[in-house]
Amino acid sequence: LTSGLVALERASPQGKLVIFKILYPGAFFPLSNILSDGVCTTTARALSDVRFCFITIDRLRQSMERDNRISLSLLKMSAMEMLDNENALFGVSGVPLQERVLSLLCAVGLQVGRRDRTGDLDFTLPFSWADLAALSGTGPEVLSRLLRRLKNAGRLDFQRRQIRDVWLQHDLDA
Image (tube, rainbow, N blue to C red; front, side, top):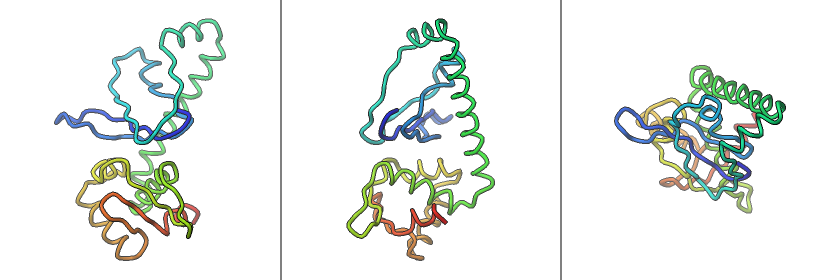
């Protein structure tokens, strides 16, 4: 992925697609499916305009057979992906929900939004609030209460999925 945002989704037991990870520029996907020779269980959906380089599995495997450095690079990328997933799991249990939500909003906003003339980040959330709840490791009702508290405290300004926020970048820097 060279630019833009991509959501990785899987079907829930009820058959609904649920976002479980957001990919940012530099991501190589779906790495776990490529290396395992397994059935692809993940759907990728562009959340913004994206640019990417498509490599067929046959071409990738041929390259891996010709040059062990490619295999080693993919192994390293896979290890980084596992560490990223471990960090996400740790974040769900070790980082307060408010900070998880603000960090996610900031990361997404910096990719798809723009700064207005006062420096505030302005963007439309490219997925649902329910998806944000799932990504944050909580339920929609809990997220709704948190968003109201953040809005009442002046830390987050939004209407529907349009977000204009003064504190997101500040919260990441703190």
